[in-house]
Image (cartoon, rainbow, N blue to C red):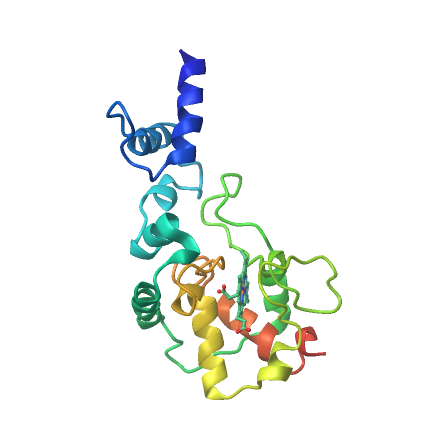
Length: 205
Ligand code: HEC
């Protein structure tokens, strides 16, 4: 029985989205039900994060990068409209704290205590400083970001909004929506902003 179920799950997972198949079984629905039954909230890794998708998550899960231009434009505009900018106009914090946040990959995992401080894990996807040689390349290199872009109001606001909600500029971005999802606090966002834009930051050396 167990063996049959596992085989059924593998098939259902591979064709999920295909809806109804011959014989009338909705494997997509069955797979979802099975996942809902098995995937339980453990610590800060909550099941809602997986199952309660908002519209943009649903669209990106369904069609990924093939999302139609008109649809992605509408979704991006809605994400941008929901960005919360710092009310006091203070965008830059402490780059040293920002470097620690960029290096920290902990947070929201089942092994993390509830309420612990999350990291940004920026190095998992971006080169940032010359000193750190271990980094991923899913995202573009951010080395010299501030030196190349400067600190005009447009750049500062764009950078804040991009980190707050990457999908405001790329509907199905792989980058986490740090502010939108409450992964990083406003103070932490200021610190990673400083890491990117402060002329004294190692990003700009
Ligand atoms: C899972 C991978 C991933 C992580 C983690 C990640 N990013 Fe990104 N980031 C990307 C990708 C991919 C892009 C390219 C644009 C896009 O697809 O959204 C990007 C783009 C950017 C940009 C825009 C660059 C430009 O040239 O305009 C900034 C700024 C940025 N990321 C900052 C950060 C910061 C700061 C962190 C950590 C708090 C971070 N990213 C974490 C994947 C990631």
